[in-house]
Image 1: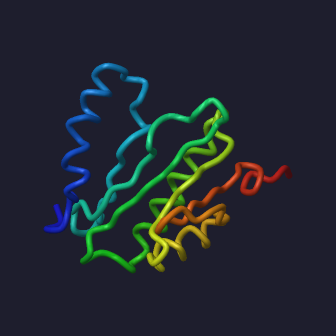
Image 2 (image 1 turned 180 degrees about the horizontal axis):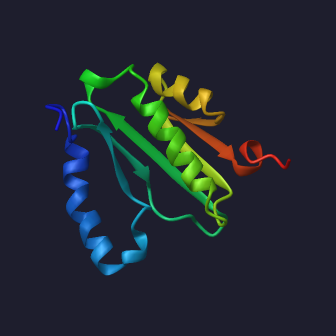
Length: 138
């Protein structure tokens, strides 16, 4: 594992996530995923869904990369895979995300993925990407 991983928030969340999975195994896949540096065989970050799709077909994603591994493409590659995984599910129609208003790297990632800014709430930017935007008919 990276020295800077897991974050304190993730350390607090993981026991709760295990309890949720024990109570409802169908949540598997709709929670935490890990980013692994293949060559080093080291966990360098995490990402995931903040739960299953809601009744309107919306899921929210989040991601975090250990400081020593930032700006190397891990978050973009992982978030792109997570978005594609979400849209491969028939009941997912929209993926949302949020980031701090001054988090330029996350803003660039979300823009590169095609997310659109929807609103600013306090210090957070809220984003969305609709399935119809990326899964265009052939």
